[in-house]
Length: 105
Image (tube, rainbow, N blue to C red):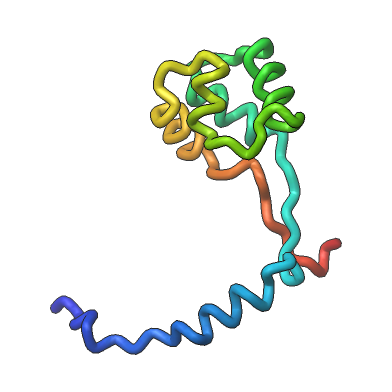
């Protein structure tokens, strides 16, 4: 039996309050994971490519990205199918950011 989703009550106000409460990462803190970046790039490129990783790191961690869309940056790095690259790299493990409970700070 399929539930009637039109009659489900969703506490949107509570969800919004929770999101806004932790807006400043008070409950979790982000942590960069280099190994996850490399695994995602290996999956997307089909091989290890230290030269690409170096150019990617320079662009992403420097001022050159200027908050442009990620697909645009990948195209600048020579990726012919940025959407496919993103999809392949995310399948490996998602974002290179890991979120740890704030009590581990």
